[in-house]
Image 1 (cartoon, rainbow, N blue to C red):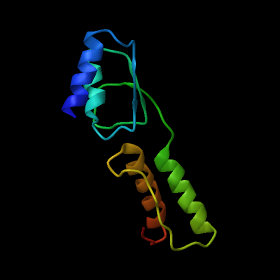
Image 2 (cartoon, rainbow, N blue to C red):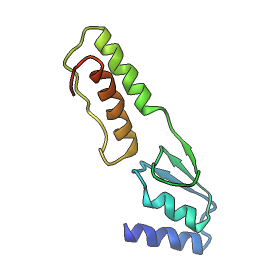
Image 3 (spheres, rainbow, N blue to C red):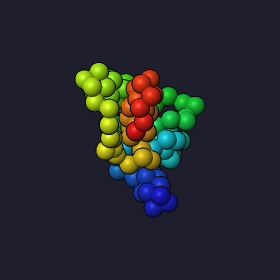
Image 4 (tube, helix red, strand yellow):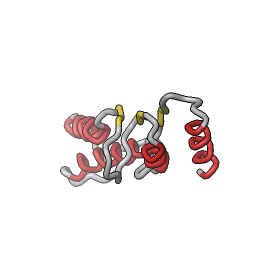
Length: 111
């Protein structure tokens, strides 16, 4: 993480880029906070939570999508569902699991 921070600081200080793209954010992602502090434009593919400032991101409603998908499977009569998900430290994976668990909870099913 420190090497990554050093790299970001260097490319900003040397004006090597005009903007930065961040992928696979984690909750309270240090990269988002650092780039905000450095004042360079950036966009995040996904959402990171826990900041008191706005930033540009593109994402889908992972929680809502997985809630609806699980709800549909339950309506079709499926009762034993599994979730093969991404890294559980990444925000999108957290939201997906949350949506699926929420749908399962309404019927008393568990993941």
